[in-house]
Length: 404
Image (cartoon, rainbow, N blue to C red):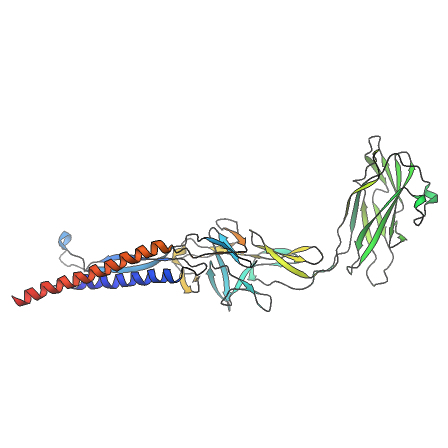
């Protein structure tokens, strides 16, 4: 009599219960992927080739298959909680050792690096001067340095100059006398140190369909290329600007900044019968700013927000995928390592190729179905009991044989 079949069944059922118990224990572990015990039958080699009369000698656990199906996505209040919607893994660096995970619960350490709960660094594409550097993977670090100021180089105005306005002689213009010009408006400019300056535009009607534009900065005339003559056609549309480009310049500033040099754009000016009014003011400068927060887009780009109202890219999260994810070697802590059977990691930006998109302020839950696992547990327990009964029956038969 052989007890091998029943004993192997007991061992396999016990290991299956271990797998099910591990799934249940990790039902609340973010990014955890459930395992399934894979059974295989066992045959002894037969030199005589027993064929159809050969009886197997039991079962075994061939392996534990990881199930990389999508888990539910739960919202959180942490902008660095990131869920992957689709395929892919976060690429983590732990002291230079690369591992992969679906657990997107991240935070920022004291040095500004984005890290997991175990301290591993999230990797991706770094940014240089506000632009993503593609193809170069590095650990992601959120710089808390001030955003450098940008001096104004271009400015524009869109306004309507009333065609019914009275002609104001250009020679009589005095910026401090409102009776010597028809219309004025002010805008803010920035120098190379980020300090703000007030630019005031004065418009004089020189003749029918012709207006002169005077530019003053901080109360000082700044018509570097001369006073601009704006000429409109009979439909009230701007037809010519003389000189074609009005380059506004100022002398060296007292605060040590470089001279202000601005190209003015009057292309949005009109002359209709309605009253004076400003429709738009624009300029491309800004003061320095401090980082106040950040957003992570579905493409993985981390966009920093600053106190000056500006935003700048700080980096981009990278994702990796594998031809055979089930071949990954589990490391614990919801992390896996590349192996010969998983294939080489295919790394890129979220949303590209087969990689999924990211959702900030959310985490991927475990994909364990507790109801299914409890049913599997009952089944595994019955299988264990049945194998024990098989051994008991074998023992009874053996006792009967011995008693003969």
